[in-house]
Length: 178
Image 1 (spheres, rainbow, N blue to C red):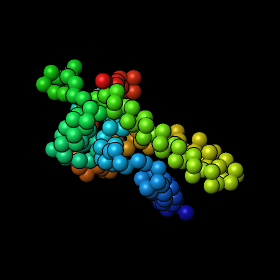
Image 2 (cartoon, rainbow, N blue to C red):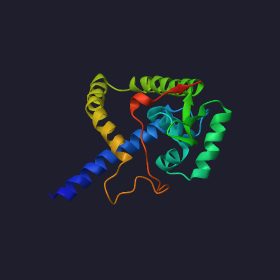
Image 3 (cartoon, helix red, strand yellow):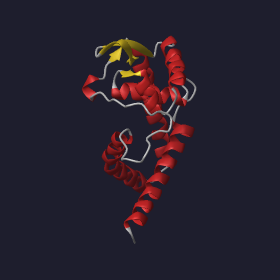
Image 4 (cartoon, rainbow, N blue to C red):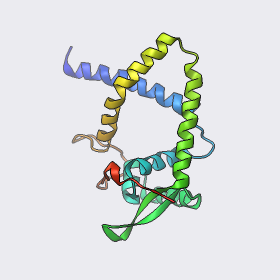
């Protein structure tokens, strides 16, 4: 078996796992009443990466800048995100998460975990153990994929929606504003 075939098999297997996990999360675990998927994704990115320029956020989320501007304006009106002065460029603003926004994200995560706990009760102890072990092995590797998703190899587009330069902030620069 050649390297391309083996890589294709890995991509198919991991892809199917991620497809199933996404479906489970979107259909059964997430509370879709309080936030749209695009709002939740944008807020999670702002929370994870810290204050971020709107243009960078739009590029990373693969949406147009006008669409992201409208989304951020709605989230600002709800008190979930805030605009902050960019210390590197006085003409620009950064988008940051508020205390209320962080609380909402934390509540959504807690609800997902509670729903998952209830679903896990339907598994045998062997299935739970296997899933736990697989998760412990896969989590650090998946984390590396997430990091590399914003910096794909040459010739592979991260998102079709944005061609702007992407910046990142170190984890220790994340802040909650309220």
